Image 1 (spheres, rainbow, N blue to C red):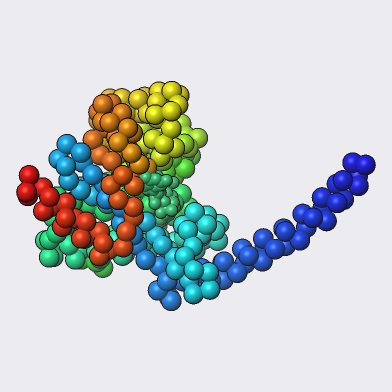
Image 2: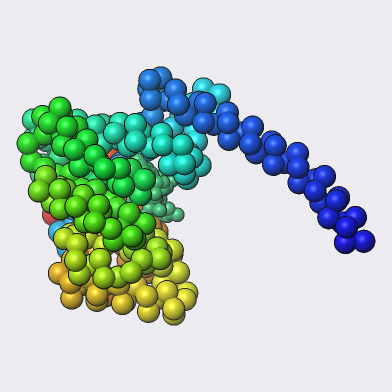
Amino acid sequence: VAKEKGRNRFKLFYPSMAERERQRFTLETLLKKAIENAEFELHYQPQVDISLKSVIGAECLIRWNNDQLGWVSPMDFIPLAEETGLIHDIGDWVLATACERLRHWEETQAPFNKTCSYLAVNVSPRQFAKKDFAQRLRHIILSSGLQDLSMLELELTEGCLMHHSYESIKTLAQLRNIGVRISIDDFGTGYSNLSYLRNFPLDTLKVDQSFVRDCIADSKSRAIVKAIISMADGLGLSTIAEGVENHEQLTFLQNLGCRVFQGYLFSKPVAIDEFEAFLNESISVLAKE
Ligand code: C2E
Ligand code: MG
Ligand code: MG
Ligand code: MG
């Protein structure tokens, strides 16, 4: 019976495996052409300092719009880009686009410089692990003409620093020399050895949105959020809570001493025009107060 069951299951399983392989291949083929066809776009999600009541920065999130597939979520194509190595070209495109935007703001001074002082870009582990990552970044920054390099923040994940290798320490030191800001994204969800917090020069921990989501209903998530914020405090790092969707979460996190927030409560990630309008609006609201 077991054998029969197994055979049946195999029959059902096999076509779906093949189908998945085909889908993956299609996705990979289309992804390869996406940069030259200009199918990517950056969206911007504000980071709000609640005590200043202003937008102090934004995270850049990549969007892919393909004729055949429509909008594809980064959750669906970033892992594939990592596996295939396409992440290096995609990552360079993201960094170049963010630097050009920053340079434009630097030149025109408004509305960006009023309160908002940085853009954060996601860097995936394989991208970070490439030996010439810092070199490529330096080149991208130079080509953009950007002057104030503290306007660029790199969001690394625990996965980037997990191996604690000579190479990753060297890359981090190079990034420090360049002068960009460094934050740890999705903090608390990686399987990392915390000693990197002692050895690496960082600026910010981003409390993962899964803990933020559950911090009202689940006492364990609450305990983890408390511990992360107090640890960051002790280490002299700032914290950002991501995925904040309602006032209960905001109040709870504020009471723990967190000041900077990112989430749907304030804004979804939006296209550049909408983001600039949001900045202008929050500035005029502030001016009225
Ligand atoms: P992430 O860096 O942790 O980004 C946060 C994700 O949470 C974004 O999803 C954002 O849209 C979403 N989010 C923000 N606020 C809320 C909220 O209040 N509630 C909920 N439910 N979600 C919220 P998105 O844009 O789909 O990106 C998913 C992930 O894809 C990112 O997670 C990041 O790991 C990766 N990613 C996005 N853009 C890039 C990129 O340019 N390069 C690389 N390497 N990875 C990227
Ligand atoms: Mg991020
Ligand atoms: Mg995150
Ligand atoms: Mg994430």
